[in-house]
Image (cartoon, rainbow, N blue to C red; front, side, top):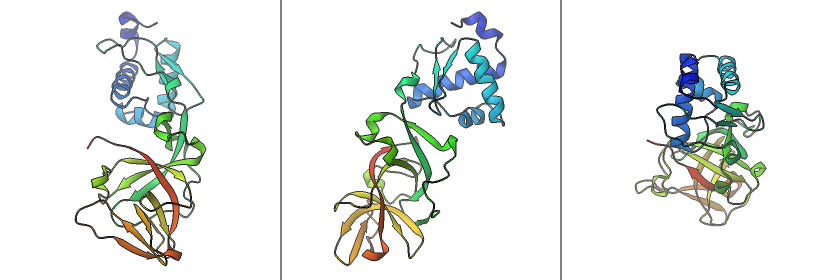
Length: 228
């Protein structure tokens, strides 16, 4: 296990990585990605971040799992911090972040949504956020716009959705509007030949679309709220 003396032998870069990781884990409840570590510590190369993480594993400060993208665990106390640690075993479900979705006006998204997801765009999610749904059926989208503000969903939040093509009236869903090449996040109401998409905002009107121009892509399971 590392101690204060060992910590002082680490490079300044490695010390900064450990301090950032501890702070991030305390605030979020899960470890950062390699990209986030690099951005926070002014390291432009992910390979350099990886090199230093491996050095910290060798020094006894980190445990690392290759099975999850955020599979990092602090196993030694960092001077000047609390004793709180986050176990890699607490982060067991992986969900792809496939893009952004408008909670205001509809937003264009790629036709191949859900494919070709970069490894760094995989999110490690606590199982309780999935409500018993298998992680292979779930994807994540970042919210743009504020039309769902009264549902406590703000711009920058992340919504977790289950892949589905059906929904009940009142469900919050991501719908694809093929005639427009756009997708949006709204409450869903089937009114026969037309679909009513209802925002959760006091000054925004409902959107009405032809039922043939409305394809459900996912039902919202939960929301990961960001600090605004």
